[in-house]
Image (cartoon, rainbow, N blue to C red):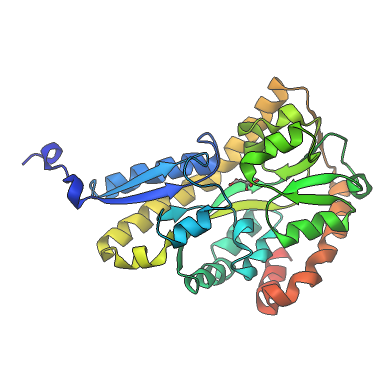
Length: 316
Ligand code: LMR
């Protein structure tokens, strides 16, 4: 039978539901769609990845439970959002932890990344990859250029004790809110500031409800792509291999694509809005770094000395 007619029957096809919370024109959104296409190609239609973007199935607050209950088989939350169930992941939330792309890649593609992914096995999750978005920037309704400018601000944050401590240390308060509630909370002044990547600021139009944007690159925002482990373990080995191949190809592509997208969308924000954009000078960045990194010891016992030492070696 010619290839086209040799279509896999629906009953034979393995369907994997992949839920995420961001828009499609973001690094994670594009990567999820690309991964789905590659899996289709590499498995010769034997596996179908159904992607549900924009929280259309589950919010960031619900998706980890949904994964554990096998209601969806794949999710890709920010690494910050799994720190409550796997505490060593707090490492990646430390401000300025891996301050360059090279340091990040060395950490995530090496022993640090392996150790973090291994942690997930103990909670029935198969960690498949780290997907990069970019570094976080600050938006606010008042200029934030120096550490003292944080005093009295109320930041919308992801659920992460490290991020909470980072802002509280500077005299700001925090509200842990879901990603898709961020725009509204800024619009109605429930919060007045937030941190995020340019792609999230752009795709969710946060620039429309904030007056100032500071390019600070003070923290990393990336994802861990995860599968329900009992489901993964039951997949035939050749299927696992093709899924992992599609994942690796997508991940490599995304390292470059996510940088390009964040840069292009910053230019779009400049064109489309009146938000005032300020880039920290090297001196100011050093001032932020010196002040923010004092919170590291607070988390050392939770993250573990060995992992902290590996991190310090990469930062040197
Ligand atoms: C956020 O909650 O701010 C973001 O992490 C959302 C995402 O998945 O990028």
